[in-house]
Figure (cartoon, rainbow, N blue to C red):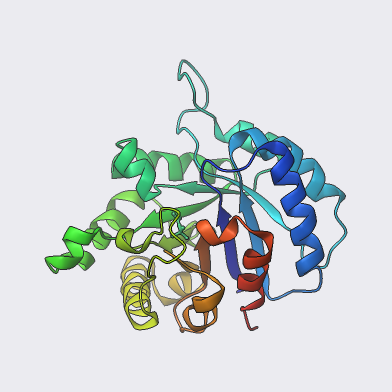
Length: 259
Ligand code: PEP
């Protein structure tokens, strides 16, 4: 199982900036084969990036992902994007249930579950975000919160489908919100969360299915801490926000993956 390193650009970068980023990144990671690399730009840059990525010659093909989608196939949902639209444009991944979608846009587990089901139906690989907030951490309710999110968001997902989903463990208190000095979880705390998620998946679908499912870490991952986080046994990659906005720092994170 290759480690997955995914960039979540959030509401950053114009089309022009996005294209010049992936040209630079491609040069920097051309010979890196240890990680699967995914860029999730804003919707407006998907088409231009899809064309640019198809034209790149590299040993490490950069893949395309979206930051969100709607669970319905089509219809009267102003401002929304469907799974079929994302597939048509060349996406292979979609981030679902990000804490910013949960907090700012009031997305709840049942809705996220419908999105996961629709994404899989269209062969889009979900990156499903879970993680406790500061209050839940302080009151000792982190595991209960993560367990509930997993139970609800993975409702109805079969043993054969689970490994198509990457679970992103993103402790909300560790997300940088653009502050480059924000502290990530320690490698021990992150591993503790990841092994809880692994055990949860083992109970749900057995060891084989659980061990072929990626659990990736998100929350202030940067060149300075990527190697130690990515060396932990249950950390199968990273979802990177702020540090993915510079091609150089994102490339350094990719190069931190040891096969
Ligand atoms: C995120 O929000 O998914 C994220 C990981 O952000 P950052 O790396 O900036 O903490």
